[in-house]
Image (cartoon, rainbow, N blue to C red; front, side, top):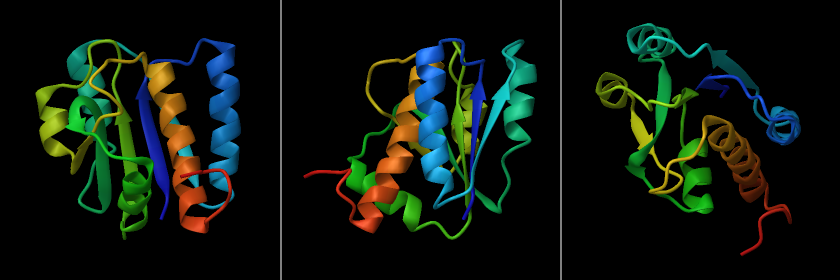
Length: 143
């Protein structure tokens, strides 16, 4: 399994960038992960770029406030039950189009609240590391 994270917009805040880089480094020890930043722009252009990362061979997860809320343990199970590569889509300031939400395999929500893309990316990378920790039984995740 490999993971791609397609995120609309740059990570501008160094505090976010430092944490994201650290989590990605840790996740990469177990699961190859690739960050793919997309330039924010016209909705249709962004949508086409996002769609280029979807295929039947890839399990796609769209981060959306309308998605399913799961525990960290449930998230770990979701990740590890996949037999295909996984792509996560994180939207920009305007979120995702209805088309993107309908074409992905799974809608995931971290909260009913909306977060900046930088924060959503940091939360996602941390939860990926936590999912690995749960699977391995390490002390990082405490019950």
